Length: 239
View: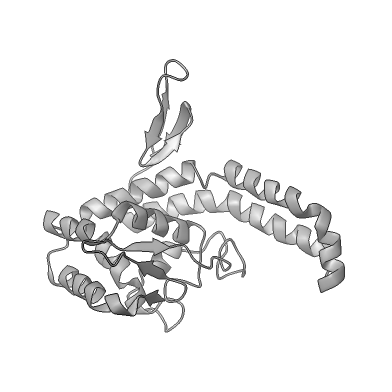
């Protein structure tokens, strides 16, 4: 995991200040938002956690900020190949990635304590925590909904299907190997959604989900946005 060396003092100064204060206070939320793009960071965490990237956060974590005064930290989504069940039992659909990413006693790889510290500190703040919970629910019903993910997988399969026999001839294996890998991705997309709802509920001691429906009365006269995620003009969510 990397942060630009010239900015190390700035990063560690922010981290130390967050450690030393009452993180349940409004002042802690202000400190967080003064130093990082909190909404972007929450979306970054939601993506890493939902897709079960287990070569993270102790590896493949990149964050940066502009050198100009007042620049805030942003995170880079980087090297996600361990996600979506690359290894059975280590990144499959039932992997408790939220526990994994907040473990205070993780091993040297892939989740040592230093790599989970900032996540843990931020989640102690009630405003950050609520925004994270809401964003996770929003992406489960939007960008990471099984129907959408499987349509995306199918679209990429269609793009390269013609080339795959040549690829296998050149590099080995069979076309059935590829079919099995695409099936693995699609199985993850379906199974992950229900598991993550339960995982989120248990981790934060939440109540049962509540179905919510909304629509734009006349097409083209407005738009819907739920917890920072844009929706179609008719939408049903579990919140």
